[in-house]
Image (cartoon, rainbow, N blue to C red):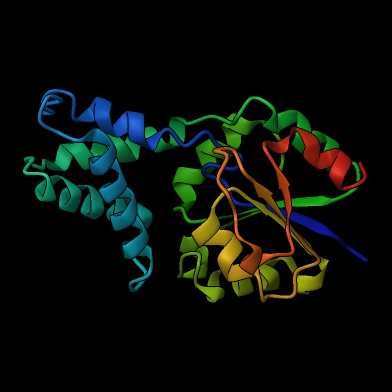
Length: 221
């Protein structure tokens, strides 16, 4: 029976440097003496999550709108060029160092796929940067919905032609991936806990690794 290892992309495979990139884009207008940078970036993160819970719209539009709202909340002038610069930066992000070798090892036994909250054209460059061929790259644009919406995962299963019981889902994202997949009947779930967070017994069972380097061994490759 076919088995597929699916991955979240940003933060799991791709070093999603959105915070530092945002600060760089806005560097000419940030008064660091009077701005709580961590609070600003956290507000930006929360607004992105709120946006994906609403009716579907392309991810590049979400980046624009959530950045605009976060900036206005903190009294900063938003320019369309700010959002444009952020969108243009996303495809340049490359993989975490251990990712390509881990994926190549997994391909000896499994099909591999990405399920990502992204636009087709954005993730395409990120996949090129990883340098490993995936069997499927499934986006929110294709599903017409974002994780954590169940529709995104159901679309992925249908596209791959598998039942949830044939899927091992691997992700860093908690609210986007591990919370919504608890009751989907997946074969296995693996949390890539890159940031040393505590996790939750309420969403067990899942395996936990600090990065992808130990995943091939965990999955018998």
